Amino acid sequence: MTFKSICLPAVVCCLVLLLGSCGSRIPIHTSYDKSTSFEKYHTFAVDLTPAELGPLGKHTLEESLRARLGARGLKEVAGDQANLLVVCSLATEQKQIGSAIAGRAYFPSNFGRYSGTAGIVQAPEMTEYT
Image 1 (cartoon, rainbow, N blue to C red):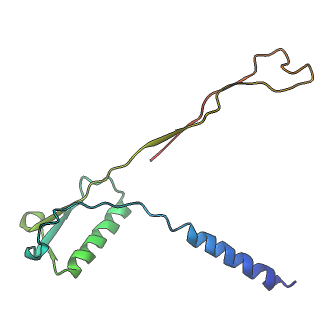
Image 2 (image 1 turned 135 degrees about the vertical axis):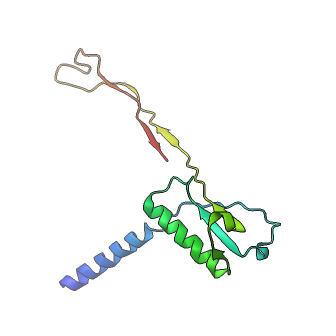
Image 3 (image 1 turned 180 degrees about the horizontal axis):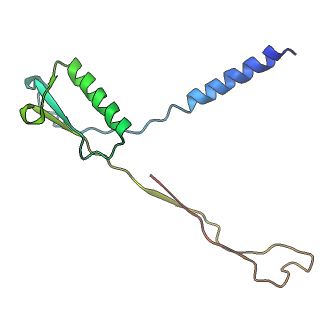
């Protein structure tokens, strides 16, 4: 077997796995009055002050909003002159996972099954994520 016949499939598999891991996205929910006609709006302003985004996230969101609203014919102006004010708010959900393993663990030793000790105490493990 040659180096190419071994290396090429491995590289292809790595690329497929790498690109496949990029597929999950954060769900985004928008809310607006569906009965409102957006044709009457000609100007907009973006207010991202309440958003808890980093500098890169704010910049990305602002550019995305400007591009999409500009494509619909809206022009960006100062906040007090805008017909439409876009406000961003973020909500995160915290989840907690607890392990079912807790209590004492006894291990066999050279001096009998319990070796005369009370065992090793194991605390349940709690993992938090957002």
